[in-house]
Length: 242
Image (tube, rainbow, N blue to C red; front, side, top):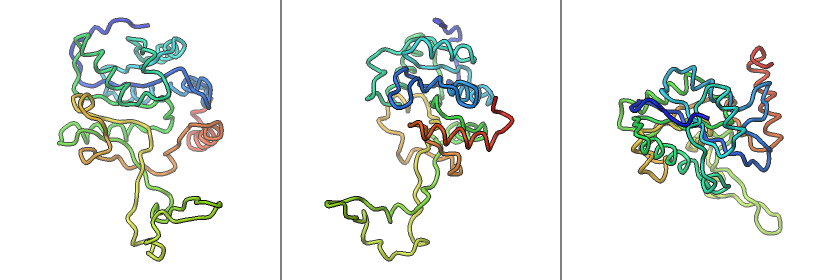
């Protein structure tokens, strides 16, 4: 494991959170996805952008650390157990990594959190996100995509297994008259370092979106998600699969 970062002043850092505990997909962050550990896709994407002075994996797990090093990332610390449970937020992990850098006299201007399970991440989207925060008043940028159906027609199960609309006032509103809604796709979050350290949320007016197509927004939380994502990846990038 890399224990020392030699450069004392850097401009950009990628932080890839990858804890060892995963209940629904055991060892998810290093499970083979189309022939490679899934974390490798995030590391490779970060390297291909040529944007980052440092690519750091934040993990509590020595096997994940070893895999990250093999694919070209740095693991300058092992994340403490109190930041590796089911209640630790992404912001907690980012702040811990940035605090560690500061305590080791390594300053940086911009940080990008890249999830370890994001094989559909595109170089162009990472580049666009950086451009959106680099020379602007925006603090953060991250990819979003549209919901496939209008959220204002959403239904919920009520008592006795009956259905109710969340917004019954839109029962007869034409689809084209409903405001289009977006959601975070969970690939990456660019931000100014000081904004990450001070904020409690990035889903605010000081964030700017990178809009991506829906088919590239793939949650990988269950074995079914994993299988679906692999099939899609094999279709989109047949020559990339081993």
